Length: 153
Image (tube, rainbow, N blue to C red; front, side, top):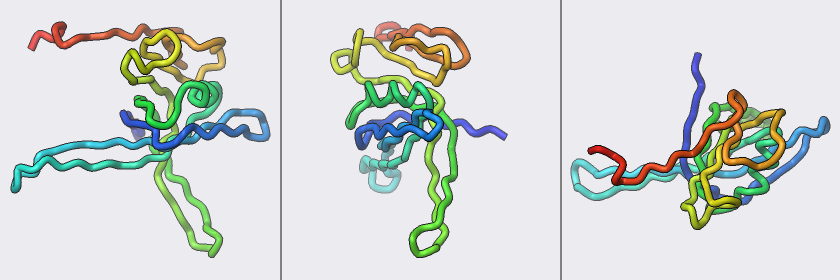
């Protein structure tokens, strides 16, 4: 089985950071992702927006809380999770959300935080301080900027 989700969107609300009883950080926020297409019948441009709840854990949650805020553009990479619960009336409820495994700031250079470069963060026990890249499976990866003139087609 394979459960992988990659989304790019804007935060719909500020990050809400909480801690479990064991001291692990949990961050939650909403993400608005959209798509546009041209209607085949009318030729009109159509837009669709989807609002998704994002959950981030560990040190990544603390970093998200520190640097992300409502309106910021971010790339989220993670997995789809089905949350199930009973509401106050006893009715079973459920919703899908994303458990993020990594995220990357995508705001333009003038809007970025820190050294004004793209930043990639993943949960990692070896993390010490904010850096350009933060990855659970590798120690670092550099952000590469590619301009329109660099593309050969």
